[in-house]
Image (cartoon, rainbow, N blue to C red; front, top):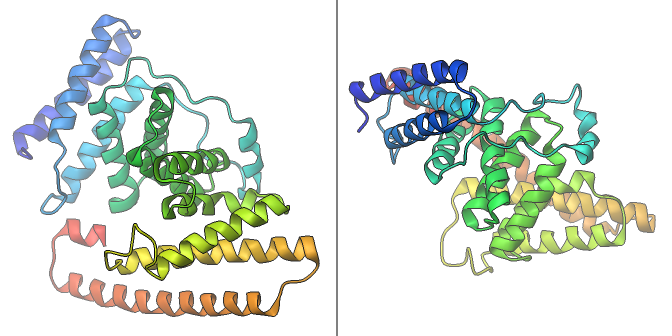
Length: 309
């Protein structure tokens, strides 16, 4: 349960971790200590965020990150000197191996902390990326390629892309492969992951075919004609995500067509223009809605809701 006593225990766990780090070198006692800490920390994570205070959630995330840092050696610097250095990712070394075997409880806690840091508070994208990178690496080592592995791999790719991290190219390629294995080559999930590979594709026939196929998959999803979306009304956020994905795929296909064949058919440019107009209109409406919600929160609302918004 989320109580003051639980938070006190959480602080004790963090203190013990810091002490163990100084005294132990990864032996049996260290493994037992971090295993116990992981079990305790995982038990503190709520099933739902509603009603949880922002400071308590942030504190729990930080202690979970401390547990992660006790287990996983420091990684390379998080960001390249400039965004254009993304091509260095082809020479990325393998992620550091954990000092102790990672349990399902550890992986689940790392994922939840990363979700809070990246999506809810937005306060520490770099640490969230390292937490997700550990989870993705462990799934890869264990041969896990299910829907959960695909979701975590895509979350990692998104945050690396957002922060300009030089590991994004490798992460995007891996995310696409996991999504294909988990959901199928012509799935919406695979197409969404493939979007982050587009900027590094060469202008050749294979790349053009892939962009066109994945664009058709996303377009079908927007039309409600795929098995995964036909039975449900899609939330506005998912519609927006699919439109953005389609725009990236169609733009990439247009550039590849121009490079390979010298020109782009007028109908293709017209479709791009229409899609771009839809995105701009949606963004304008979204900003207006956010302003209204912020005004409501100023008049009343708890700190966690304000931070999450």
